[in-house]
Image 1 (cartoon, rainbow, N blue to C red):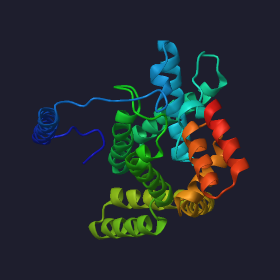
Image 2: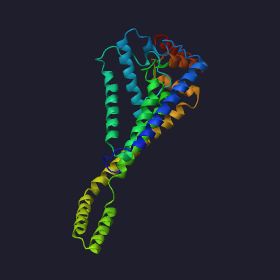
Image 3: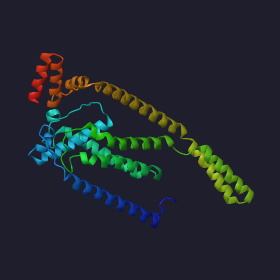
Length: 303
């Protein structure tokens, strides 16, 4: 299809029919689930999600926005990982002047930036980019505290499905970066073929077009070293990031080897979570380390 060509009406009708059927099926599933379960009641305590119990609406909005930034940071660079973020592990944001709001602002700007990149991408990559972003955003939306409060402050498990969309977008972006421009040899063969056609038909216009294509090949062959440097740079950065994430994954897997190793590790890095300190205190008691158990339980009481 040529650039700027309109989508055929038949294809538009198929697309509309698919969207309508998907919407009707989704509504039917929601209604059937509601009639079967009789609704869903959320029994949540202030220890699970203290932000939802804040009396100020502004504080809830700013704190939820900050949580979006924390989720984006975990998705892009999971340096700090913990199995619980309750109570004062993430203090509420009470004022718009809090410098922590720079994190969600950067996340929102980055999200709009990648959406713009996906919309301006060639048609070959636009569909995969937009679909991956849709998987990321739509799957995260129920856990964003926008429609209803969630029974946890931060849940790393809630990023399992959004991470699929994130990884798909990274793969599509890397594929576009590594594909580059068409090879000059292919265009040169096309130019030679066009030149031969012009010589057989005796048309001067065909010869002129062939000469123009040859000149275009010469002009496009020049930036190949620059493109090669870009590919090497992307490959080096991608390899370094992948290696760092692999090491981080292996270290985190070792933390989850048993409940004792998990409670001991996360208890050292998360001193303001009451659940984490309580589990740490119980673990020290089981190991008969009474002094460390008392200190952990005191931190649990003050959290």
